[in-house]
Image (cartoon, rainbow, N blue to C red; front, side, top):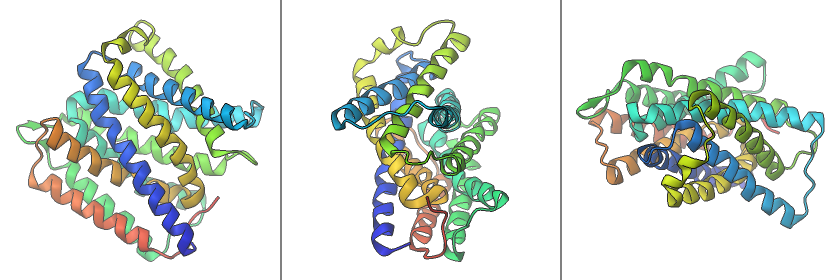
Length: 299
């Protein structure tokens, strides 16, 4: 990867990861306001899609609705948005915002595993070491019992493994099925619109009604979450192009660190030294992989 592209990828990694890390604390506040997991996830997807659509219309970009693009919208929506968001926002009351966000950090090693199985290019030695180091840090955090005085529920701790599995599958899918000539902003908008439709169905199934009314419980939070999500999605697809699926998967490291800091200093969550030690190991993994000059899967 050329130096200029590596710097761009690093900037996108940090900015996208920080924005993603804000989702869990905001989601915790949303759940405490009485908004269900499906309802909060719907707000992110629908709000993000509308903001991105407005930008696309202002730029007069074409929106493709052919079979190829529609398949991509649906596949990305399910793997990257619907499944992980439903699980993480359902798990937050049981694990805490910081603990739940830690599961993002497991997606790089799972993404790498999927890449090897599918025969795509893998990172260089330093990159592999960085990803493994980040995974070790994540495992330390997961088994550190979470918040002091409020140990994590084992069933939810195990069930939350669906989050990195789905994210890793989405990372690979978005690369291998990227439509020819697909514009990142348009693909982000279409995938979020598809996710919003699935989440309406999820709200009807799990909540017994449409997700709109409960959002009025915290309008300020909803607006803030929509703005953050729209910006994150726009940067997310640019990072997919600049860094490839394995590199992109490391936004989970940045997101988890962001959520841990916010949860600790602003939401009253308290984590032990093992949790923070694991977070530092994760940071070391990000640095090692960023410095890696070996081959990476590119778009």
